[in-house]
Amino acid sequence: MDRDLELNVHLLEKNEIKNTINAVNNALEKSGFSLGESSTLLLYDPEIEMDFDIEPVNGLDNLIQRISSWPLLGVVGYEYSKYIVEVSFRKHKEADSIHCISLSFPDGLYRDKQFLVRLKNIAVLLHEQLNAVRTISDVEIESETSGYSVDSEIEMLEKKLSKVNIG
Image (cartoon, rainbow, N blue to C red; front, side):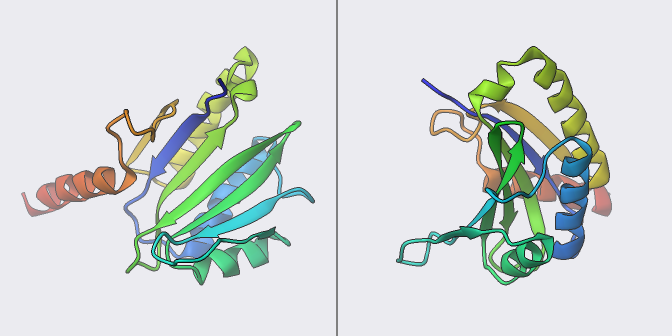
């Protein structure tokens, strides 16, 4: 059975969406990923009772505009070698900023020992570029049995941050 390796980078800074997407794109390009002809964009909102569309990315500026104007989640397919790596930009419904970047690597990549070294470097680079508060990675981290939830993780981190700022 194929399983994905996931990397979640949690942000608390309220940077502009454009700045966050540019920082992610720059870090991924440095690591050999690209927005190419087969790159797609999926926009998702679980509250909208309709099918979602998968559309071509049509460049970085279009990607920024589309994710900025969408309420919750945009998933972009980045090309890497012969694989597509899904990069999710997650927003709180009320927020105009991204609170979590998730990367999903197909099992063909994480079975490659050389790529695992590269993955660690990608995680460090994204964490530093985004000034992240927490970065975690595991196989199927967001499965039903893992107990991990992006929303509960963000709530926990925000509570810890508010205690630090008060005390």
